[in-house]
Structures are given as C-alpha cells and as structure tokens.
Image 1 (spheres, rainbow, N blue to C red):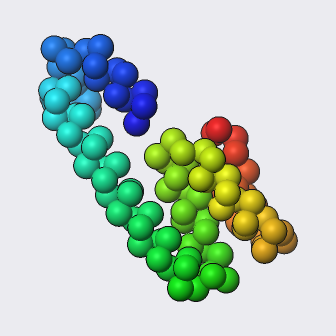
Image 2 (image 1 turned 120 degrees about the vertical axis):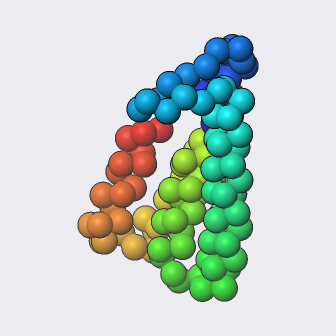
Length: 104
C-alpha cells in the first residue's frame, strides 16, 4: 500500500490501462483502499478468533499473511514466531512461512 500511495501521488493526473479496462488513478486508489479496509476487517475477525481459540494455528497463520499483505512485517513476524514455537514440525505451515519470509 505504501508503494501504491507513492505511485498515486506522483501520477494523479494520468490514467492507466490494465487488461483492456481503463481506470483512473482515483478509481484505482479507491479500489486499493477498499481492499485494505477489507483486510483490516479480516484482521479484526482473526484476532478475535485467535483470542477465543488460542491453540488454533490457522488463525495465527491467517494473521501473519494478512499483516504481510498490509506491509506490516513486525506484526506478521510476531505470528510467524508464535507458529514456529507451537507448531515446528508442520511442513505445510513451514512452506507458507518460508514464502512470507522470502517476500520481506
């Protein structure tokens, strides 16, 4: 989102074309903000789930991914560390974590 914000402020008068569909920078920016808001709402939900079900590893994994998508590496790493401590031997989870860490 930070990169999109920088790009948007530099090109506020230009339009873009993606896969044949034209969208103004303002429309694109509104779409980005809408997705960001949806991810933040999902975080609230998964925070509640992880609080109510503290041993539910999927909630921690979902939170790590969502925070990563919102470019919040500190919060993402907090959940990655928690997963590693509680579930060190799950290869599927370790594969997802390694992909997240590769992107940061």
